[in-house]
Length: 478
Ligand code: PHE
View 1 (cartoon, rainbow, N blue to C red):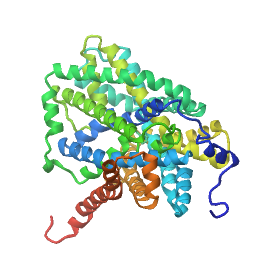
View 2: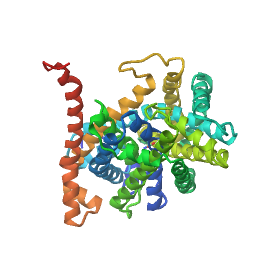
View 3: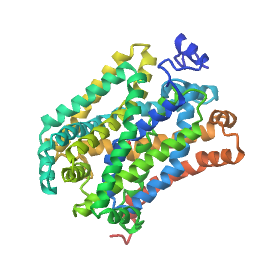
Protein backbone atom coordinates (compact mmCIF):
# COMPACT_ATOMS: atom_id res chain seq x y z
CA UNK A 1 0.00 0.00 0.00
CA UNK A 2 1.33 3.44 -0.87
CA UNK A 3 1.83 5.57 2.20
CA UNK A 4 -1.26 7.60 2.91
CA UNK A 5 -3.34 5.74 0.35
CA UNK A 6 -5.80 4.67 2.96
CA UNK A 7 -6.18 6.92 5.91
CA UNK A 8 -6.64 4.45 8.68
CA UNK A 9 -6.51 5.66 12.21
CA UNK A 10 -5.18 3.40 14.93
CA UNK A 11 -8.73 2.95 15.93
CA UNK A 12 -9.80 1.67 12.52
CA UNK A 13 -7.05 -0.87 12.50
CA UNK A 14 -7.94 -2.23 15.91
CA UNK A 15 -11.62 -2.41 15.12
CA UNK A 16 -10.79 -4.35 11.99
CA UNK A 17 -8.72 -6.86 13.80
CA UNK A 18 -11.62 -7.42 16.13
CA UNK A 19 -13.98 -7.65 13.18
CA UNK A 20 -16.16 -4.90 14.56
CA UNK A 21 -17.05 -1.55 13.11
CA UNK A 22 -16.08 1.57 15.04
CA UNK A 23 -19.61 2.89 14.46
CA UNK A 24 -21.31 0.05 16.34
CA UNK A 25 -22.77 -3.32 15.43
CA UNK A 26 -26.31 -4.66 15.11
CA UNK A 27 -27.07 -6.57 18.25
CA UNK A 28 -27.90 -9.74 16.30
CA UNK A 29 -28.19 -10.91 12.73
CA UNK A 30 -31.95 -10.57 13.03
CA UNK A 31 -31.50 -6.87 13.64
CA UNK A 32 -29.39 -6.54 10.56
CA UNK A 33 -32.22 -8.05 8.54
CA UNK A 34 -34.80 -5.85 10.23
CA UNK A 35 -32.70 -2.73 9.73
CA UNK A 36 -32.14 -3.58 6.09
CA UNK A 37 -35.85 -4.26 5.61
CA UNK A 38 -36.50 -0.95 7.35
CA UNK A 39 -34.19 0.77 4.89
CA UNK A 40 -35.66 -0.98 1.87
CA UNK A 41 -39.34 -0.60 2.78
CA UNK A 42 -40.21 3.04 2.65
CA UNK A 43 -41.73 5.72 0.49
CA UNK A 44 -40.29 3.86 -2.48
CA UNK A 45 -42.81 1.09 -1.97
CA UNK A 46 -45.89 2.95 -0.83
CA UNK A 47 -45.59 6.33 -2.51
CA UNK A 48 -43.18 5.99 -5.42
CA UNK A 49 -43.91 2.54 -6.83
CA UNK A 50 -47.67 3.08 -7.30
CA UNK A 51 -47.29 6.55 -8.78
CA UNK A 52 -44.51 5.52 -11.14
CA UNK A 53 -46.47 2.51 -12.29
CA UNK A 54 -49.50 4.73 -12.81
CA UNK A 55 -47.51 7.17 -14.91
CA UNK A 56 -45.88 4.41 -16.90
CA UNK A 57 -49.14 2.66 -17.75
CA UNK A 58 -48.94 -0.38 -15.48
CA UNK A 59 -47.95 -3.89 -16.52
CA UNK A 60 -44.90 -3.34 -18.72
CA UNK A 61 -43.24 -1.24 -16.02
CA UNK A 62 -44.14 -3.82 -13.39
CA UNK A 63 -42.71 -6.71 -15.39
CA UNK A 64 -39.41 -4.97 -16.11
CA UNK A 65 -39.21 -3.98 -12.44
CA UNK A 66 -39.68 -7.62 -11.38
CA UNK A 67 -37.00 -8.77 -13.80
CA UNK A 68 -34.58 -6.15 -12.51
CA UNK A 69 -35.28 -7.10 -8.89
CA UNK A 70 -34.52 -10.75 -9.69
CA UNK A 71 -31.58 -10.36 -12.06
CA UNK A 72 -29.90 -7.25 -10.70
CA UNK A 73 -31.29 -6.69 -7.21
CA UNK A 74 -30.31 -10.03 -5.69
CA UNK A 75 -26.68 -10.16 -6.84
CA UNK A 76 -25.94 -6.47 -6.33
CA UNK A 77 -27.43 -6.42 -2.84
CA UNK A 78 -25.39 -9.48 -1.86
CA UNK A 79 -22.28 -7.81 -3.27
CA UNK A 80 -22.93 -4.63 -1.31
CA UNK A 81 -23.49 -6.41 1.98
CA UNK A 82 -20.37 -8.44 1.36
CA UNK A 83 -18.19 -5.38 0.70
CA UNK A 84 -19.50 -3.71 3.85
CA UNK A 85 -18.99 -6.75 6.04
CA UNK A 86 -15.51 -7.38 4.74
CA UNK A 87 -14.54 -3.73 5.17
CA UNK A 88 -16.33 -2.91 8.45
CA UNK A 89 -16.14 0.78 7.55
CA UNK A 90 -18.07 3.40 5.58
CA UNK A 91 -18.65 2.46 1.91
CA UNK A 92 -15.76 4.66 0.71
CA UNK A 93 -13.26 3.03 3.06
CA UNK A 94 -14.67 -0.49 2.81
CA UNK A 95 -14.27 -0.39 -0.97
CA UNK A 96 -10.77 1.07 -0.56
CA UNK A 97 -9.84 -1.70 1.83
CA UNK A 98 -11.13 -4.44 -0.44
CA UNK A 99 -9.46 -2.86 -3.48
CA UNK A 100 -6.18 -2.59 -1.65
CA UNK A 101 -6.33 -6.18 -0.43
CA UNK A 102 -7.14 -7.31 -3.97
CA UNK A 103 -4.24 -5.23 -5.40
CA UNK A 104 -6.58 -3.00 -7.33
CA UNK A 105 -6.69 0.74 -7.92
CA UNK A 106 -7.93 2.98 -5.13
CA UNK A 107 -10.10 4.74 -7.71
CA UNK A 108 -12.77 2.12 -7.10
CA UNK A 109 -13.64 4.17 -4.05
CA UNK A 110 -15.36 6.50 -6.48
CA UNK A 111 -18.51 4.44 -6.04
CA UNK A 112 -18.45 5.10 -2.31
CA UNK A 113 -18.23 8.81 -2.99
CA UNK A 114 -21.15 8.72 -5.34
CA UNK A 115 -23.10 7.10 -2.54
CA UNK A 116 -22.20 9.86 -0.11
CA UNK A 117 -23.62 12.50 -2.45
CA UNK A 118 -26.38 10.30 -3.84
CA UNK A 119 -27.71 9.78 -0.33
CA UNK A 120 -27.81 13.51 0.35
CA UNK A 121 -29.53 14.23 -2.97
CA UNK A 122 -32.14 11.53 -2.37
CA UNK A 123 -32.78 12.56 1.23
CA UNK A 124 -33.29 16.18 0.15
CA UNK A 125 -36.51 15.31 -1.68
CA UNK A 126 -37.36 12.18 0.31
CA UNK A 127 -37.67 14.24 3.48
CA UNK A 128 -40.03 16.66 1.74
CA UNK A 129 -42.37 13.79 0.85
CA UNK A 130 -41.97 12.40 4.37
CA UNK A 131 -43.03 15.85 5.60
CA UNK A 132 -46.18 15.61 3.47
CA UNK A 133 -46.81 12.23 5.14
CA UNK A 134 -46.38 13.75 8.62
CA UNK A 135 -48.99 16.37 7.88
CA UNK A 136 -51.35 13.68 6.58
CA UNK A 137 -50.95 11.66 9.79
CA UNK A 138 -52.32 14.59 11.66
CA UNK A 139 -54.94 15.39 8.99
CA UNK A 140 -56.38 11.88 9.03
CA UNK A 141 -56.44 11.52 12.80
CA UNK A 142 -58.27 14.83 13.03
CA UNK A 143 -61.14 13.39 10.99
CA UNK A 144 -60.78 16.09 8.33
CA UNK A 145 -61.45 13.59 5.56
CA UNK A 146 -64.54 11.96 7.06
CA UNK A 147 -67.02 11.49 4.25
CA UNK A 148 -64.78 13.33 1.78
CA UNK A 149 -65.05 12.61 -1.93
CA UNK A 150 -62.26 12.65 -4.49
CA UNK A 151 -62.79 16.32 -5.32
CA UNK A 152 -62.55 17.44 -1.66
CA UNK A 153 -59.42 15.40 -1.17
CA UNK A 154 -57.82 16.87 -4.26
CA UNK A 155 -58.70 20.39 -3.21
CA UNK A 156 -57.19 19.89 0.25
CA UNK A 157 -54.05 18.46 -1.31
CA UNK A 158 -53.58 21.40 -3.63
CA UNK A 159 -54.13 23.92 -0.88
CA UNK A 160 -51.52 22.20 1.27
CA UNK A 161 -48.70 21.83 -1.25
CA UNK A 162 -49.46 25.24 -2.71
CA UNK A 163 -48.33 26.85 0.53
CA UNK A 164 -44.52 26.77 0.78
CA UNK A 165 -44.47 27.57 4.48
CA UNK A 166 -46.47 24.60 5.66
CA UNK A 167 -44.54 22.20 3.41
CA UNK A 168 -41.32 23.73 4.67
CA UNK A 169 -42.35 23.36 8.30
CA UNK A 170 -43.20 19.66 7.99
CA UNK A 171 -40.07 18.98 5.97
CA UNK A 172 -37.98 20.69 8.63
CA UNK A 173 -39.67 18.69 11.37
CA UNK A 174 -38.92 15.41 9.60
CA UNK A 175 -35.29 16.39 8.99
CA UNK A 176 -34.88 17.37 12.63
CA UNK A 177 -36.21 14.04 13.91
CA UNK A 178 -34.07 12.10 11.45
CA UNK A 179 -30.88 13.95 12.32
CA UNK A 180 -31.62 13.68 16.02
CA UNK A 181 -31.76 9.89 15.79
CA UNK A 182 -28.87 9.62 13.37
CA UNK A 183 -26.71 11.70 15.69
CA UNK A 184 -27.45 9.40 18.61
CA UNK A 185 -26.34 6.36 16.64
CA UNK A 186 -28.53 3.88 14.90
CA UNK A 187 -28.44 1.04 17.41
CA UNK A 188 -31.05 1.47 20.09
CA UNK A 189 -33.71 3.85 18.82
CA UNK A 190 -33.67 2.46 15.32
CA UNK A 191 -33.77 -1.18 16.34
CA UNK A 192 -36.71 -0.53 18.60
CA UNK A 193 -38.65 1.50 16.06
CA UNK A 194 -38.23 -1.19 13.44
CA UNK A 195 -39.38 -3.94 15.72
CA UNK A 196 -42.64 -2.18 16.49
CA UNK A 197 -43.38 -0.62 13.11
CA UNK A 198 -42.83 -3.29 10.52
CA UNK A 199 -45.59 -5.76 11.57
CA UNK A 200 -48.09 -2.94 11.99
CA UNK A 201 -47.27 -1.60 8.56
CA UNK A 202 -48.22 -4.95 7.08
CA UNK A 203 -51.48 -5.13 8.99
CA UNK A 204 -52.47 -1.67 7.84
CA UNK A 205 -51.62 -2.36 4.22
CA UNK A 206 -53.88 -5.39 4.40
CA UNK A 207 -56.65 -3.22 5.84
CA UNK A 208 -56.30 -0.97 2.78
CA UNK A 209 -56.34 -3.98 0.52
CA UNK A 210 -59.49 -5.35 2.12
CA UNK A 211 -61.09 -1.96 1.66
CA UNK A 212 -60.06 -2.06 -1.99
CA UNK A 213 -61.62 -5.50 -2.34
CA UNK A 214 -64.93 -4.33 -0.96
CA UNK A 215 -64.95 -1.42 -3.39
CA UNK A 216 -64.88 -3.72 -6.38
CA UNK A 217 -61.83 -2.10 -7.92
CA UNK A 218 -59.40 -4.92 -7.18
CA UNK A 219 -59.87 -6.76 -10.47
CA UNK A 220 -59.17 -3.58 -12.40
CA UNK A 221 -56.08 -3.06 -10.29
CA UNK A 222 -54.90 -6.60 -11.00
CA UNK A 223 -55.54 -6.11 -14.69
CA UNK A 224 -53.66 -2.82 -14.67
CA UNK A 225 -50.62 -4.29 -12.95
CA UNK A 226 -50.49 -7.69 -14.59
CA UNK A 227 -51.42 -6.78 -18.13
CA UNK A 228 -47.96 -6.80 -19.62
CA UNK A 229 -48.77 -4.60 -22.57
CA UNK A 230 -45.54 -3.33 -24.03
CA UNK A 231 -47.26 -1.00 -26.43
CA UNK A 232 -47.98 1.25 -23.44
CA UNK A 233 -44.26 1.68 -22.78
CA UNK A 234 -42.82 5.16 -22.83
CA UNK A 235 -39.26 6.09 -23.65
CA UNK A 236 -38.25 6.05 -20.02
CA UNK A 237 -40.21 2.98 -18.88
CA UNK A 238 -37.24 0.54 -18.84
CA UNK A 239 -34.85 2.96 -17.18
CA UNK A 240 -37.52 4.05 -14.69
CA UNK A 241 -38.33 0.44 -13.78
CA UNK A 242 -34.68 -0.50 -13.42
CA UNK A 243 -33.85 2.61 -11.43
CA UNK A 244 -36.79 1.97 -9.17
CA UNK A 245 -35.58 -1.58 -8.50
CA UNK A 246 -32.39 -0.01 -7.15
CA UNK A 247 -34.20 2.69 -5.22
CA UNK A 248 -36.67 0.40 -3.54
CA UNK A 249 -33.98 -2.07 -2.44
CA UNK A 250 -31.75 0.77 -1.17
CA UNK A 251 -28.91 -0.43 -3.39
CA UNK A 252 -26.55 1.53 -5.63
CA UNK A 253 -25.55 4.17 -3.09
CA UNK A 254 -24.00 2.30 -0.21
CA UNK A 255 -26.86 2.34 2.29
CA UNK A 256 -27.04 -1.43 2.49
CA UNK A 257 -23.24 -1.54 2.28
CA UNK A 258 -22.99 0.70 5.34
CA UNK A 259 -25.50 -1.49 7.17
CA UNK A 260 -23.56 -4.59 6.09
CA UNK A 261 -20.53 -3.20 7.89
CA UNK A 262 -22.43 -3.60 11.17
CA UNK A 263 -23.63 -7.13 10.42
CA UNK A 264 -22.30 -9.85 12.68
CA UNK A 265 -20.15 -12.46 11.00
CA UNK A 266 -22.47 -15.40 11.83
CA UNK A 267 -25.38 -14.12 9.72
CA UNK A 268 -25.87 -15.57 6.26
CA UNK A 269 -25.82 -12.93 3.54
CA UNK A 270 -27.83 -14.97 1.08
CA UNK A 271 -30.77 -15.64 3.36
CA UNK A 272 -30.76 -11.99 4.47
CA UNK A 273 -30.90 -10.84 0.85
CA UNK A 274 -33.73 -13.29 0.14
CA UNK A 275 -35.82 -12.01 3.04
CA UNK A 276 -35.19 -8.32 2.30
CA UNK A 277 -36.01 -8.62 -1.40
CA UNK A 278 -39.14 -10.71 -0.87
CA UNK A 279 -40.59 -8.47 1.84
CA UNK A 280 -39.81 -5.30 -0.09
CA UNK A 281 -41.44 -6.61 -3.26
CA UNK A 282 -44.45 -7.89 -1.36
CA UNK A 283 -45.05 -4.52 0.28
CA UNK A 284 -44.82 -2.77 -3.09
CA UNK A 285 -47.29 -5.18 -4.69
CA UNK A 286 -49.74 -4.86 -1.78
CA UNK A 287 -49.48 -1.07 -1.86
CA UNK A 288 -49.95 -1.05 -5.63
CA UNK A 289 -53.02 -3.29 -5.52
CA UNK A 290 -54.54 -1.34 -2.65
CA UNK A 291 -54.09 2.09 -4.24
CA UNK A 292 -55.10 1.07 -7.76
CA UNK A 293 -58.23 -0.64 -6.42
CA UNK A 294 -59.25 2.73 -5.02
CA UNK A 295 -58.18 4.55 -8.17
CA UNK A 296 -60.36 2.38 -10.39
CA UNK A 297 -63.27 2.11 -7.97
CA UNK A 298 -63.46 5.91 -7.85
CA UNK A 299 -62.61 6.34 -11.52
CA UNK A 300 -59.57 8.46 -10.70
CA UNK A 301 -56.66 9.00 -13.03
CA UNK A 302 -53.81 6.53 -12.32
CA UNK A 303 -51.27 8.84 -13.95
CA UNK A 304 -51.50 11.87 -11.63
CA UNK A 305 -47.90 11.42 -10.51
CA UNK A 306 -46.41 12.18 -7.12
CA UNK A 307 -49.75 13.09 -5.53
CA UNK A 308 -51.34 9.66 -6.14
CA UNK A 309 -51.05 8.40 -2.55
CA UNK A 310 -52.41 11.66 -1.16
CA UNK A 311 -55.38 11.69 -3.52
CA UNK A 312 -56.43 8.07 -3.00
CA UNK A 313 -55.74 6.87 0.55
CA UNK A 314 -57.66 9.75 2.25
CA UNK A 315 -60.75 9.03 0.13
CA UNK A 316 -60.62 5.39 1.17
CA UNK A 317 -60.13 6.05 4.87
CA UNK A 318 -62.54 8.96 4.88
CA UNK A 319 -65.33 6.58 3.94
CA UNK A 320 -64.43 3.64 6.12
CA UNK A 321 -65.84 2.94 9.58
CA UNK A 322 -63.20 4.19 12.02
CA UNK A 323 -61.44 5.60 8.97
CA UNK A 324 -59.90 8.53 10.80
CA UNK A 325 -58.24 6.15 13.23
CA UNK A 326 -57.07 3.63 10.65
CA UNK A 327 -56.08 6.31 8.16
CA UNK A 328 -54.06 8.16 10.76
CA UNK A 329 -52.39 4.91 11.75
CA UNK A 330 -51.73 4.06 8.11
CA UNK A 331 -49.95 7.35 7.47
CA UNK A 332 -48.18 7.02 10.79
CA UNK A 333 -46.62 3.77 9.72
CA UNK A 334 -45.78 5.09 6.28
CA UNK A 335 -44.03 7.84 8.22
CA UNK A 336 -42.12 5.28 10.28
CA UNK A 337 -41.18 3.37 7.14
CA UNK A 338 -39.90 6.63 5.62
CA UNK A 339 -37.99 7.39 8.79
CA UNK A 340 -36.20 4.03 8.91
CA UNK A 341 -35.19 4.56 5.26
CA UNK A 342 -34.13 8.18 5.74
CA UNK A 343 -31.70 7.17 8.47
CA UNK A 344 -30.03 4.71 6.14
CA UNK A 345 -29.70 7.38 3.45
CA UNK A 346 -27.40 9.39 5.69
CA UNK A 347 -25.32 6.50 7.00
CA UNK A 348 -22.72 6.28 4.17
CA UNK A 349 -21.95 9.99 4.44
CA UNK A 350 -21.97 10.10 8.23
CA UNK A 351 -19.79 7.02 8.65
CA UNK A 352 -17.35 8.34 6.06
CA UNK A 353 -16.92 11.79 7.55
CA UNK A 354 -16.61 10.40 11.06
CA UNK A 355 -13.74 8.22 9.81
CA UNK A 356 -12.19 10.90 7.64
CA UNK A 357 -12.03 13.61 10.27
CA UNK A 358 -11.92 11.26 13.21
CA UNK A 359 -14.59 13.36 14.79
CA UNK A 360 -17.76 13.13 16.74
CA UNK A 361 -20.87 11.72 15.09
CA UNK A 362 -23.09 14.51 16.40
CA UNK A 363 -21.09 17.21 14.60
CA UNK A 364 -21.04 15.28 11.34
CA UNK A 365 -24.77 14.54 11.56
CA UNK A 366 -25.51 18.21 12.09
CA UNK A 367 -23.41 19.38 9.16
CA UNK A 368 -24.88 16.81 6.80
CA UNK A 369 -28.35 17.51 8.13
CA UNK A 370 -28.05 21.24 7.48
CA UNK A 371 -26.61 20.69 3.98
CA UNK A 372 -29.46 18.33 3.09
CA UNK A 373 -32.02 20.67 4.57
CA UNK A 374 -30.75 23.61 2.52
CA UNK A 375 -30.82 21.55 -0.66
CA UNK A 376 -34.28 20.25 0.22
CA UNK A 377 -35.70 23.77 0.08
CA UNK A 378 -35.60 23.51 -3.71
CA UNK A 379 -37.90 20.50 -3.51
CA UNK A 380 -40.15 22.24 -0.98
CA UNK A 381 -40.65 25.03 -3.49
CA UNK A 382 -41.18 22.68 -6.43
CA UNK A 383 -44.88 22.28 -5.68
CA UNK A 384 -45.58 25.98 -5.27
CA UNK A 385 -43.30 28.99 -5.85
CA UNK A 386 -41.06 27.14 -8.30
CA UNK A 387 -43.85 24.90 -9.62
CA UNK A 388 -43.65 26.42 -13.07
CA UNK A 389 -39.90 26.46 -13.13
CA UNK A 390 -38.76 23.39 -14.99
CA UNK A 391 -35.21 22.45 -15.83
CA UNK A 392 -35.77 20.25 -18.88
CA UNK A 393 -38.23 17.58 -19.93
CA UNK A 394 -40.71 19.50 -17.79
CA UNK A 395 -38.95 18.41 -14.61
CA UNK A 396 -39.14 20.56 -11.51
CA UNK A 397 -36.19 20.54 -9.10
CA UNK A 398 -37.84 17.77 -7.15
CA UNK A 399 -38.39 15.68 -10.28
CA UNK A 400 -34.81 16.30 -11.22
CA UNK A 401 -33.32 15.12 -7.90
CA UNK A 402 -35.61 12.12 -7.97
CA UNK A 403 -35.00 11.14 -11.59
CA UNK A 404 -31.32 11.98 -11.73
CA UNK A 405 -30.59 9.69 -8.79
CA UNK A 406 -33.03 6.92 -9.74
CA UNK A 407 -32.36 6.82 -13.48
CA UNK A 408 -28.61 7.45 -13.42
CA UNK A 409 -26.72 7.44 -10.13
CA UNK A 410 -28.05 4.23 -8.59
CA UNK A 411 -27.80 2.04 -11.72
CA UNK A 412 -24.33 3.35 -12.62
CA UNK A 413 -23.01 2.69 -9.13
CA UNK A 414 -24.73 -0.71 -9.26
CA UNK A 415 -22.91 -1.43 -12.50
CA UNK A 416 -19.58 -0.48 -10.96
CA UNK A 417 -20.25 -2.63 -7.88
CA UNK A 418 -21.08 -5.68 -9.97
CA UNK A 419 -17.97 -5.26 -12.12
CA UNK A 420 -15.75 -4.69 -9.08
CA UNK A 421 -16.97 -7.70 -7.14
CA UNK A 422 -17.46 -9.90 -10.20
CA UNK A 423 -14.15 -9.24 -11.91
CA UNK A 424 -11.71 -7.51 -9.58
CA UNK A 425 -12.02 -9.14 -6.17
CA UNK A 426 -10.50 -12.66 -5.97
CA UNK A 427 -13.36 -15.08 -6.35
CA UNK A 428 -12.21 -17.35 -3.52
CA UNK A 429 -12.63 -14.44 -1.15
CA UNK A 430 -16.06 -13.56 -2.47
CA UNK A 431 -17.22 -17.15 -2.28
CA UNK A 432 -16.05 -17.49 1.30
CA UNK A 433 -17.53 -14.16 2.35
CA UNK A 434 -20.88 -15.09 0.88
CA UNK A 435 -20.64 -18.61 2.24
CA UNK A 436 -21.74 -20.12 -1.07
CA UNK A 437 -20.54 -23.64 -0.45
CA UNK A 438 -22.96 -25.28 -2.87
CA UNK A 439 -21.44 -25.30 -6.35
CA UNK A 440 -24.74 -24.62 -8.07
CA UNK A 441 -25.50 -21.58 -5.92
CA UNK A 442 -22.00 -20.27 -6.50
CA UNK A 443 -22.18 -20.67 -10.27
CA UNK A 444 -25.57 -18.99 -10.41
CA UNK A 445 -24.30 -16.11 -8.33
CA UNK A 446 -21.06 -15.54 -10.18
CA UNK A 447 -22.81 -15.69 -13.57
CA UNK A 448 -25.33 -13.13 -12.32
CA UNK A 449 -22.78 -10.69 -10.88
CA UNK A 450 -20.28 -11.04 -13.74
CA UNK A 451 -22.59 -11.12 -16.73
CA UNK A 452 -26.31 -10.89 -16.11
CA UNK A 453 -26.45 -7.81 -13.87
CA UNK A 454 -23.95 -5.65 -15.80
CA UNK A 455 -25.40 -6.64 -19.17
CA UNK A 456 -28.95 -6.01 -17.99
CA UNK A 457 -28.01 -2.53 -16.75
CA UNK A 458 -26.14 -1.71 -19.95
CA UNK A 459 -28.97 -3.02 -22.12
CA UNK A 460 -31.47 -0.74 -20.44
CA UNK A 461 -29.17 2.25 -20.85
CA UNK A 462 -28.50 1.47 -24.51
CA UNK A 463 -32.18 0.95 -25.16
CA UNK A 464 -32.94 4.36 -23.69
CA UNK A 465 -30.17 6.06 -25.63
CA UNK A 466 -31.30 4.28 -28.78
CA UNK A 467 -34.93 5.35 -28.43
CA UNK A 468 -34.14 8.87 -27.29
CA UNK A 469 -31.07 9.80 -29.29
CA UNK A 470 -30.41 7.47 -32.18
CA UNK A 471 -33.94 6.75 -33.44
CA UNK A 472 -34.86 10.42 -33.90
CA UNK A 473 -31.64 10.93 -35.90
CA UNK A 474 -32.35 8.16 -38.37
CA UNK A 475 -33.86 9.15 -41.72
CA UNK A 476 -37.52 8.38 -42.36
CA UNK A 477 -38.46 8.86 -38.73
CA UNK A 478 -41.15 11.27 -37.76
N1 PHE B 1 -35.46 2.05 -0.29
C1 PHE B 1 -36.00 3.23 0.26
C2 PHE B 1 -37.48 3.26 -0.07
O1 PHE B 1 -37.97 2.43 -0.77
C3 PHE B 1 -35.31 4.48 -0.21
C4 PHE B 1 -33.83 4.40 -0.17
C5 PHE B 1 -33.11 4.49 -1.35
C6 PHE B 1 -33.17 4.22 1.04
C7 PHE B 1 -31.73 4.37 -1.35
C8 PHE B 1 -31.79 4.11 1.05
C9 PHE B 1 -31.08 4.18 -0.13
O2 PHE B 1 -38.17 4.13 0.35
